[in-house]
Amino acid sequence: MTTLREVREQIKGDPKNWRVHLMDFVDDFRYYKDPRMVAEPFELTDDRVDALLASTAEALCDELGIEAPEWLASVPACRDPYFVGGLENLKAISIVESPLRFRIRKIFVLENFLSRV
Image (cartoon, rainbow, N blue to C red):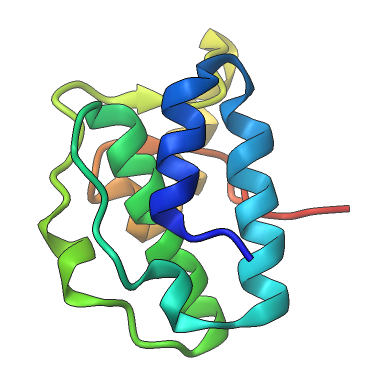
């Protein structure tokens, strides 16, 4: 069971595989449903990654009916809009589909971003 803080460190140490670390956390959080996994704040060092992690944690808490810890609300939005898909032709659809928890931090993802097969 990996905490969000530990995921932040994993991504910091292995930025090329951020998706793997993030989605492993998503799977674990959905499985364990343990609020302790998001209880500890992490050091804010990268506005995109920090906002993405906070938005993901809040979205999962909403999905699972878990109260999100207050510290997540203090994680700021990205300075510039962040289109996670990175493809120009997905920007418009990402703006429309991006869930609220992501949009408020200027992160744009497809609605199925947290979906797993």
